Image (cartoon, rainbow, N blue to C red; front, side, top):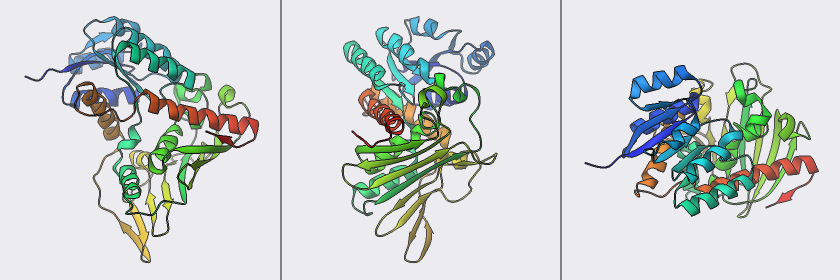
Length: 336
């Protein structure tokens, strides 16, 4: 019988519930414990899964039988809980962004190295088949390197609850839903060499930007332009990506656009030879990508694969986000 990794999930909100489902579906793992301050969520999850239930993250981390922890709480608390879990000898997987500062990430990387445990982040959109297809086609030379990568993010009003509080998110739209745009752009185009940004506030950490325009320059050439904002009609969730190349125009109507029922287009479109063509590709919706990301973490702990986003990779995206805020506040291009 194959041994199962005993996993605890901290935070049972929307993403936390998808992480729970991902652990349940993963090979080589057992959902062993869950924690949330909402007793009803804990009770319901325990009844459905037979996992141990805790009212606080600290209680779950203190459970000596838990071997790995998945952290799904507001961004502000990522660093503290991840550090406690690592120091308790657990492997740790945390929702994006791993931390709200690169300095916090440095502490977690050092703690993971000291403990000999894996520390990784859930950059789930890396596992969306259209994003992977575009990255792989460029890397293999089957598609010319884009001169421009356009990444849109228009949302019909601020996301509710804690996500509207810059103290909890670490900023505004770019440090929350917009964070996906950063790591997806880097995955497709490679290392970022410089950033330029314009926001609707000069205090993004304090009040949270509602609108941001960002240009990323890449070491190997080309640029990405991110247009992000909450000022769209109710019901809009537009996270479309377009890649402009010499031989084709590629359009990804959007992972979350499909999940939020904003788009019903094919998941991947290509303009070439005078018209649009749908490209057949594996199907995966947003919850599926969350599950694939946590399954990758479990496989990495079990020695079956490499970790897609380790602490150092997660830190790099946080560093880029910090540079974007510096660029907007200081009114200048920031080299990385």
